[in-house]
Image 1 (cartoon, rainbow, N blue to C red):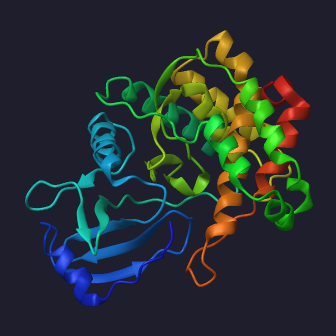
Image 2 (cartoon, rainbow, N blue to C red; image 1 turned 30 degrees about the vertical axis):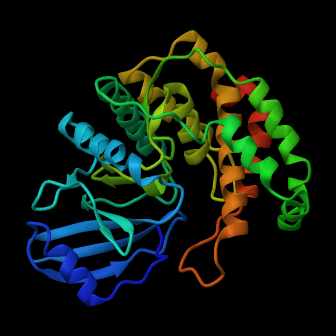
Length: 318
């Protein structure tokens, strides 16, 4: 989450009046993430998250994302529902940009995940995958390895090296991962971005999974590998926590056991997950305006993870 666009009090008041959620009390910007502008909205009836879609998200795909939230919430998953306006619309526009109001869920995102938290998240992710099987729409994953490898190829090699010398030749390494990518594992709707800051915990349970704007129809084990890479290291991509990794897998398989093919593919799936974030973070590093109220994230945090999975292979999941 982030704030790229600045709205005035009158803008917020006019927008909130279009919803049956009471009168606006306050609107506070959320300065995290890289893709959208977000505000915590408080009204006389409760709290909500307002999102303005700035980058990467095609507005024509919003019915998929927002409809998915409703489907998962109605299926009993810990997911915030979309708040529809007085006319039933899932999103509106301000100055040509789409905005959506989302249910606020209580809870706190973990900063240093524990095995118990990881086990709960694994189970919650599996429930999303199972519920996603009955969602009537599909969306191709446009950040699959072939796509993120293309992002790196499109970057000026000198600019990548300017970020850090360790990114020299990264496009060729990405192409190698694409060549080894599996294509026949079981699929459903995946979250694709389930970092600790996209999970809310309350009393040891998952109270919310948020930020589904990279959700797509893809391999479920890939989503598990993304989550493994996001949860099992420190923020710099070091100090792998095997207990957290084992708990994540155990929680997931308690709800949805992996096939032998899925388990065998976890190392390359994790490499592909790291490729995705190396590429997206490198692109964001290059393109983020200097005056944006946003935190730029270091692509090397995931290059280190990539190195780990490439070296350890199946042992990373044993």
